[in-house]
Length: 213
Ligand code: PRP
Image 1 (tube, protein in one colour):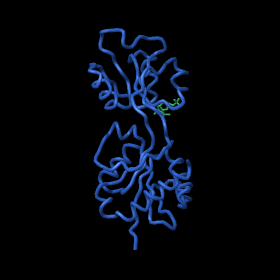
Image 2 (spheres, rainbow, N blue to C red):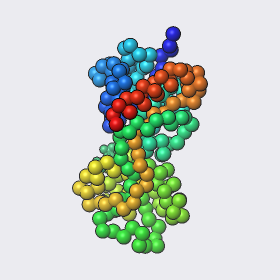
Image 3 (cartoon, helix red, strand yellow):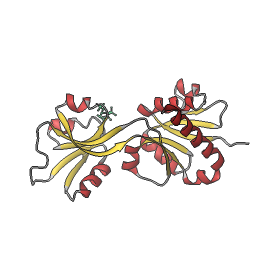
Image 4 (cartoon, rainbow, N blue to C red):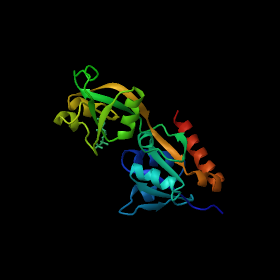
């Protein structure tokens, strides 16, 4: 008899894409499609409960083993790190991290210490550390594009999907920092304890992804 496993899904942009994939895997996601205010959703006909959470919390729950699996963006993985298995690139939620600056500004053409604003201070720190460049980093919680407009920073490190937000705010990407997409992650102990069930889930995921190509 299979035990019920728990999977944490990142709410928002990745949520719908995750559910589309699960439906292609033959899972009935109707409880998550009309969630109301409930946060845990047992799927009928398959031993899996879906939890909806903010991206960093997906990692926290999987790391602590209260969720066996998670779907989270590589951006959050790069920022937060943690001990878990990253088993599949799910192929959706594709975007890039970029360094962006006010259009026409010469970011590298000065010796003064540059200041960067980002929701991802760790990714920003690692990027400039690799270049051996000393920068000031200011953590911003959202709409980071405002920081250079308001004069708080010389540039930003942020997610670029269509590029529209940068364009409409007079900024331009000048360098790629990393490629990002949604990943399936697995708690390390769950992988041993529920190996058969988890491999079944990963196999169905892989098959559905192969069916898309
Ligand atoms: C993300 C990101 C950019 C925008 C990029 O923000 O931080 O602001 O999307 O998308 P685009 O290239 O298609 O314009 P999000 O919408 O998640 O909101 P937030 O900035 O408030 O976190």
